[in-house]
Image (cartoon, rainbow, N blue to C red; front, side, top):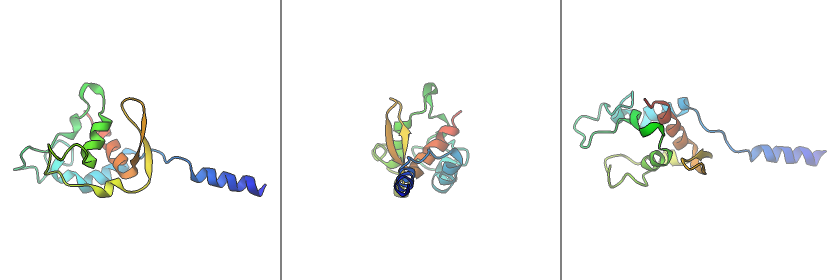
Length: 128
């Protein structure tokens, strides 16, 4: 019996973490993105004036009704943005911590740091 309890505890500790919800990402957005992209995500933050190119309207990322998960994750974590947006800061803190499985456009899953996944979930929630 003792062995079964120990196995159950171990199995529970190995369960994958659930995807974060939009409010968790909203906090990160306010702390890291709103100053340029604006409270509403439309690219009209306090620091946006004088920026060339202007910050992106993050409420219009879902072209054709599909949210570009891979592109958004790559842009935030820095893999694809350096050439196009050298003025966008590094967000190393978003790349730390536990990972959650994020489903990509092709249906595959990728482990993503929870803070980065939370921010992506929030951005998906503000699409118009």
